[in-house]
Amino acid sequence: MAHAKSVAVVGASIPDEGGFAGMFGCMKKFGYRGRLYPVNPRLQEIDGVKAYPNLSALPEPVDLVIISVPGRLVPDILKECVATGNRNIHIFSSGFKETGEEEGIRLQREIETIAVEGGLRVIGPNCMGFYIPEMRMLTWESASTESGPVSLISQSGGNAQDFSNYLTDQYKIHFSKSISYGNALTVDSTDLLDYLARDEQTRIITMYLEGVKDGRLLLDLVKRINRQKPVIIYKSGLTESGARAVASHTGSLAGGEKIWKAFFRQTGAVSVESLEEMADVTQALHRLGRVRGSKTAVLGFGGGIGVSVADNCAQANLELPALSPRLMRELRKLIPPAGAMIRNPIDAAIAFVQLHLLGEVLQLVARSGEIDNFIISVPFDWLFKREPGGAYLKTIASYLAGDGQKHVLGKPMMVVSRQYESSEEIRKWIPVFKNILMSAGIPVYEGLPRAVRALAKTAKYYEYQLDK
Image 1 (cartoon, helix red, strand yellow):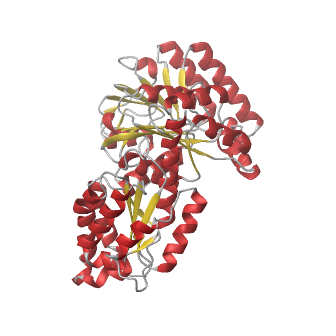
Image 2 (spheres, rainbow, N blue to C red; image 1 turned 120 degrees about the vertical axis):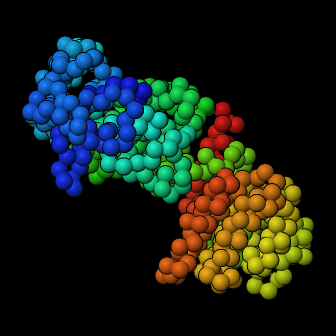
């Protein structure tokens, strides 16, 4: 399905002015690289492309049929798929089990019977389907055309779209495949996970799950795959109210919180609690390289920030070890005592305005053997005026991306931008700062708590690899 060279869209229509372009319109606009057939008995053509009255009229069986018609019409379309030898189906239509209503449940049973007896592989119903940049496949309005190392399996079409756009826009990390599978008629998350495990273009697997049909199979798959590729899972519906919402969204049984805690403990998969956190951890796994421990040094300036990040680390189970007396004596030769604590976090204000000192501090700590990782916290508001128009922020980013990265001697390093003033002049430097660092392979976050949680979960992932 993901490499379909021919696609038919049943229910293709002429897009409303300013409205949703529809499945056919989205595929055509995105530049689908295969043969695209609109199917609608009431139209002769759509956007200059010949329309066909039904699947039987197509010049060939296709690799994928997208069904976008009212739910009550789906059974007859599936029967036609069986009759015409079209075995791969994406049902965009909704109004099935997810409604919780008798008619919707009956309708889903009917289409499941047709699909199983006819040997159909069905994504959906009630889902957005595929985003495959390499094939220019897209069933929503817009996305990046660039391919990357991340793939997503999502029970929610909205979350598939939002996460794909967020990871690309915020962190410049692109997708190999994003697949929304909805009510999981005959193709479930486990089928897609098994496929991505064998997909050479996918190096990190992300998942948004509401429920799963075969929990034991999912556990066995994730436990095995997590050895080869990181698996990051955002599992929703863990509370009573969340479980009710899951049932009304995709008609799934969510499973209890204790069960899923045991699942994550046994598989080593990374558990996250939001799409934003899933993006944060994805960036860490993509850019940090192997994390060999949790002992972390935080460099910044401001005593209050140091106390706060100590709490952040404790809450995330990230180790913030006190530095040895010997190392602190060496640091004190570089950092004057006035208002600067060096126990860890290291309050190194002078190092941010004399960048050669920052390099010396980083190298001294890296060589000590007391630290596994670095988080560098850069206060935009305080440093903005160091150069006209805020250009010093670019200077710091360039330093960290070059000499700074060399001074950490191969240890993982994250950088944090901190900015609180309501100043557009300052905020405009954030994307410049991020792009310089991310282009050098350094993960960047807005705010220390996000960086700390991402590093903690990345360290835990690699710890699991060593323990088992």
